[in-house]
Image (tube, rainbow, N blue to C red; front, side, top):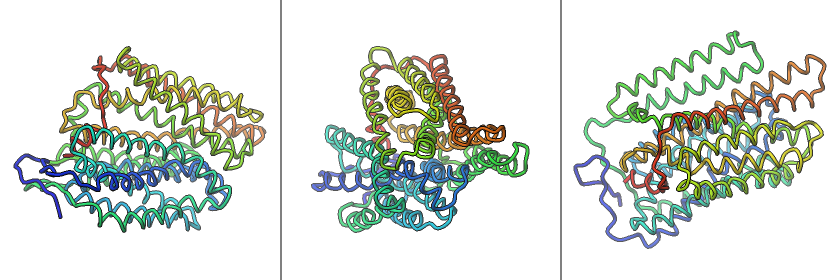
Length: 496
């Protein structure tokens, strides 16, 4: 059975007359799938040193294990939402599961770096296909506002748990078995989902109006443009900035991004209407999101390498060492939510950015003799707490001034900017750390000391980006209504 709209308004759908009696079981199924997909965004971090040794990645090439995922997810997310609306959410969900299973198998069986990177691109693409489709299905399953709020709370909690457990699960599997099992463990989950979804989930889609187009060219131009820019930046770790190896991919990437903007101006149904950025608050928040995620993702990337390469932590110990970050973020989200009605979104988000920057400056003081309790954990707790404070305020600011119909677009843009920021951050800050370490070793400094100094420099730059983002938000963001919204509820409402 396929549910389509029979009205004349664009994007309208006929609500289900009676709630599906299996809706909670379906929610558990969809949440489990999204848990596994998002788990793979963080689960590789602890395994990075073992993956580097096993596949002979260079220091700069290792960044693609992270960037392959986030570039595909960020570049294709908006297209994935549109495809789900047009071709059917269940169909796109199934396609995402198939891509997820195949790409996990490729990553787990990788014998060369290119296989791992290809698999990671596939995993990112699976998130871009599955996440919007899953949210759309939840919107249709839970038509009662109270039930929907509860369902979205469960959904968000399970996804958050995936981010928290990713480090621990990675450490356990890598230490006790092999890094390959962080990918192979996905296969039985994918098989169960592929068996159950056609039997439990009803198809739903929107009627495609005459003349309505899919901006596939724009999405491809965005993704390839970002790949070109990131590739050029990572090449700068091993080549001079003026070399062909750096300039050619950079210029090609920038050209493709310009083409993408021109496409968005011309097509009748763009992925992201440029008028969306006319709102100053939304534009500034999405711009500073690049700073936030650049610092956040590069922090987890480099601190993991420092723990295992310099301090000689095992993968299991390294995974457990990340638990204070999760505690800090969880606490910060609660504090930030409580502060918004009292201080306002602009002040809270600015405090969060600046405080997270302070946490990175604390972390940058590490050296080769640092202990976990005195050298790593203090900065981690400060960073996690203030990063958590930032999250509810930034999400609400990203939805400032949007209508219910545009809330899906606003949420999608915010998520896309998060992925892009993470990719650019790893490319720029890891390159900075590698070049600084190489220069120090050229002056006779030991590899361990030089590497640590390089990471410290990158952490300071990340901290400066956080502080700059906080100051920009404080100076340029409008005074936003302090009423805390449920952005997830608005997002799925906009998909109806």
